[in-house]
Image (cartoon, rainbow, N blue to C red):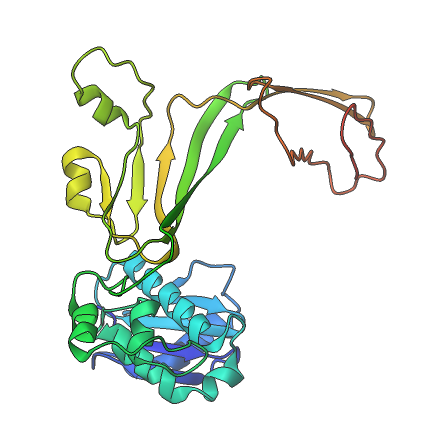
Amino acid sequence: MISMIMVLNQKGDIMISRQYRDDVSRAAADSFRLQVIAAKEAGSQPPVKIIDGCSFLYTRHRKLYFVALTRSNVNPALVFEYLFQKVRILKAYLGDDFEEGSMRNSMTLIYELMDETMDFGYPQNCAIDVLRLYINLGNVKPQDEPEPSQLTSQITGAIDWRREGIRHKKNEVYIDVLESVNLLLSSTGNILRSEVMGQVLMNTKLSGMPECKFGLNDKLVIDKEKGDNKRPSVEIDDCTFHRCVRLGKFDADRTITFIPPDGEFELMRYRVTDNINQPFRIMPVVQEEGHTRVSINLKVVANFSDKLYATHVIMKIPVPKNTARSKIKGSYGRAKY
């Protein structure tokens, strides 16, 4: 698993390092500084570098490098998720625009957070709501002090994303479904690839420890139902859930059962590739007029109902970089070069 976590500045100097295993040393930072930071590979090369049998996985925040070192065959997605969670935790304690100066002034806090979020190279509790119950330094405002037994159950229990005793004057749940349609069309207008990427965002203001159930018109569920029920179905290819979702219940009956965190959070992400209706039909006509002039006519037709309206529609037409001037005529909206 992870052997060491380092935070370096833009010069490659180690600001903070925490060693969880003894198979790497701080001398490895010199190799990272010379082959990644000094070579200016960050941003142009993949954020994974293998040097002398040691794997360096890193991400950047402003002018800081958060680096994880390991010599084992670790899951890179897990390491990057921990680094992203580490940055998110520091933003909660030090502010969204924390930098080298603010980190040097909070060394004790940062080392305490590193010890609480990882043990012997294995990520542990990264929930900000739980961390701020017993680490009340920085900008995170402490809440009502819980009982010691309650604090222990929240740290080591199965539900660490929600504390007990939450009370609201009114129980409310807000659900937003955001979808983006990605299409790749050929020059003749045929669809080469299409997919819908969606996410379900929730804002819960519920008292106590409520159990919520969320249902989908999934094709697998509707096919299992008896009778001639012809409800429209959607075949979901893959989906990822917030850790509050009970995956066993979802595998059994395809219902999303969970005890939600308090406030805003992302419940799930999903992807659909079949039966996607193209929102617009694009008909381009490109004509070359001599060696120095090109005429482009673009016609866009909406495929949805007359009762629906599309807002903030932007069409971008790439042209050569050496284009000297252009004349634009549009039937609707505005156009500029």
